[in-house]
Amino acid sequence: NKNIHIESIKAIPQTDDLINDCMECGFCEPACPSDGYTLTPRQRISAYRNMEALPEIRNNPALYNEMKALYQFKGIESCAETGMCALRCPVGINTGAFMHALRGENPSKLQDMAQRHFSKVEKGARLAVGAVQALGVNRIANLTESLHGKFEGIPIIPKSLPHRVTDFNQTREITARDRAEHKKGKQVVYFVSCVNRSLSEVGSGTSTFTHTVNLFKKAGITPIIVGDGLCCGQPFESKCNHQVADQATLSLNRELLRASNKGEIPIYIDNAPCAKRIFEAKKRGFLDDHLKLYDAVSYIDSHIVPNLTITPKSEALLLHVPCSITAIGEKEALTRIAGRCTDQLVMSDIDCCGFAGDKGFKQPELNRNSLRHLPLKSDGCASGVSASKTCQIGLTETSGLPFASIEALLDECSEAQKG
Ligand code: SF4
Ligand code: SF4
Image 1 (cartoon, rainbow, N blue to C red):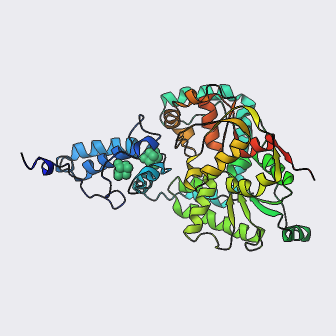
Image 2: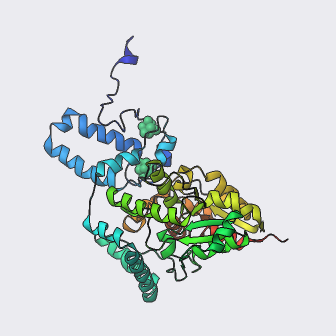
Image 3: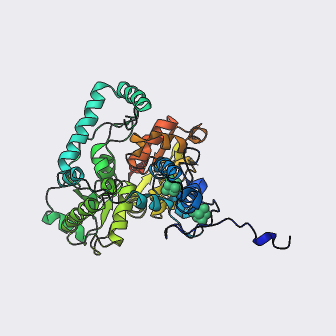
């Protein structure tokens, strides 16, 4: 048959602009935390196309509804939506963004109220964490794990849940002395993310906030601390409540403009997923162009590390680069900083851990699936390091190694330069 190369070609039905260019090559699959658990990005696209365009399915309401119901979990709800697939895709398709779009807008009065009274929500979260500690984390973890197995929707409390933060202390006003210090180029606005205002380092009980302030002190930098009642909007964005998420970002913008003296003073943002959300919001015009924003890793790499004396640990250290760090282009900087703190750096080589905000509590199976090979990497390592608090919880839980933030690790291995 001379026409064999052009016959029986697989149909690629056009169903949505976000995925129409997909040729179902599968290059994206190794990045996906749900590969082996539910669907890969390629399978998500292929299943959607078949469901929406194949006449055999479209014209059979019973079959169509059955597929749609299955797709709701296997396609949409089990996607971490962190978009690591897009970085491997030759045509840049972000299946996570497509799944997010399929979820649609989800307005909620409760979330609107939570955003407007964020200080109270934060206080409540700290009290809840304190109550779990008082009752015994292991006991609550075992109980929630067994309930989660029996009843859909019951979240788990992981055994590695960190202690609540008790020492967060915001700078109340910017003084004349602060301004004078700024003229010497030695000042930074430190936006402490809500997760780091609530949860300490995994295992140690010291807050990431304390470690970061220590680093500023060693490098001779004065921080102006902000955060109380503020949120980057990520928790609302992940619930598809985009309007409330953007309101949160606008409030943050006002406070950052005030604290940075209309953008004169650089701004340090801790916790990588929050920095990613803030950078994206700035591109969409929700943050003032004058603000000089740094994520923690790039600021530490450029402003802090050069002013420290670092003594590397003589033990193997496992580094997990969070997907948010890869997405903002700081993978090399994080690897460089971690490499200064150990004489043996081991990479997790996992694109996305699948913890995905609070999904790691509600759907821990996704995180466990993504990290199923981590114990092979952690064998022989004494500890781990990363740059996102929720990732660190899942990584500690799965590997059994304590995963610190990069700030805590660097604080432990460094001192101020003499002279
Ligand atoms: S890499 Fe891109 S084109 Fe290939 S299957 Fe994945 S989404 Fe489709
Ligand atoms: S966003 Fe993440 S979980 Fe979703 S399809 Fe892409 S790689 Fe997989």
